[in-house]
Image (cartoon, rainbow, N blue to C red; front, top):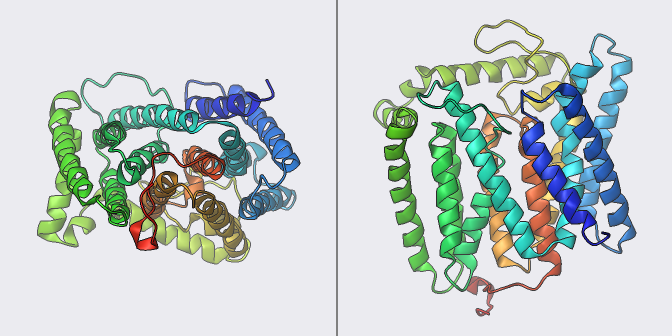
Length: 415
């Protein structure tokens, strides 16, 4: 059991997280129990990592410490903000709490698991996340014939690691990994069916970065053509399928891009979603200016961008400035430093494994697009994203590279 412990902890965390955290049908008490279980699991992972010699990279350790420090200060601040309901504080800070836990659990999981086990878990969680995201958003957009109840975490962060992994494997492996590309295209197609316009942008960025990485390897030029051609065909297929399965929502919403080409900036100014996002940016800036250094803390409700009314159920705004509102300039600097340290160390851990290194770079580029919608730690799916990257980095740091080639620009020859 000692050997299987890290694997079991990783599976319990990821499977439990995507099913429990954002599921309206699960009682709050059970969600709190899962949070408590996660903290216990993270503490066990932390203790085991510390006992292991040189198992926690300095950057990852510092990133975890900085995020915990910000949380601790925020929790202590409840003493001088008695108007904040502790339950609201916990609900608002939930993803920030899960972030360091996900790093520790993912790192220990990757140090104990095989490459196949890590990749399999990423594909399973990614497929589940893509389905949950699409079903949830089709329901919200009133798609005809979509009567399935929301069954899990609806976050576009969840399937990103699996999509990026497929691209990384296809672009850098010596052997042509057709199944990896097919898996990426299937998950991408499922996401496209949701009708989300941001999906198209971050998928385009992911494929662009993948093509750029492919150029670094000898004899890979043909793969760029295959990648782009299959992406176009899959996109057309997904839009065609949308007309029959989801009332054409995806096909209708993607026409917005053609309106941008035809009308330029007017397409943004006449778009309801764009208007609300601009409003969110303005409100976030105004709220930050009210307390620029320390912020107003977690657990404070916000106005609805649709009605302008403050309700007790809205604790965020779709703006990257939201973190400044909550933890101020000081807290934001510490959290951004924590993210840079964790992801920077993860990429360095994978420096001898071109497949996983490419996967991490593609995933981070795709995630960067989503920061336009809000600070990443505000997104409920971000801890799964963090877990996935930490696990890949850890397994890459200790296992032999399989069927990989070095970029010829670095002066190495294919293995």
